[in-house]
Length: 212
Figure 1 (cartoon, one colour):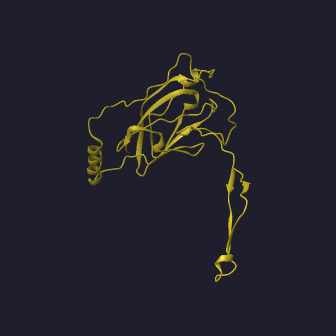
Figure 2 (tube, helix red, strand yellow):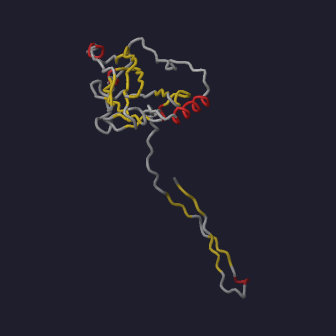
Figure 3 (tube, helix red, strand yellow):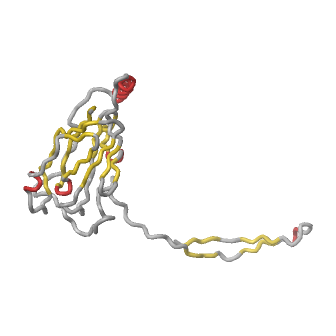
């Protein structure tokens, strides 16, 4: 970047004799200022990756042959307005025996990456219900451990209600390693889920939190 600036010097020799005042114009001065290099913007929301731990120079996960992008939509239809949901949520909080079953935060354990509102699907994140779409980088090795941590203020039970792991990476040689792995039906107190997302081109998981 080159900046051009014209500098003018006002020279007054004596306040009583303004006729001697002169305006002397100096030649424009040019100088260059270094501009730090900029990198191209990354994906948004950011991919889950481990580039600070591993080299991200090799693509591990490719789409299965004949696969299409999943159409992630709500699995339930609610006719209640968002305002009505919030009112009902507030009423429940005022009840004496009410327990907050909300998951306060989601975190990828290995990279300390927070899964927050920027991953929420539009109109699918509100009181009592949250739907996230979290992209996983294609540079993550298929055998990489990816642990989802859920934190809450109350003692809760988190149930795995359903899942879809039907689209493994085409580069994955041992397809049986995906279908042969099993998850616990729920977690209590401490909620850590070692998900098989590194082996999958796309997948989905439906969790539900309840009072312990």
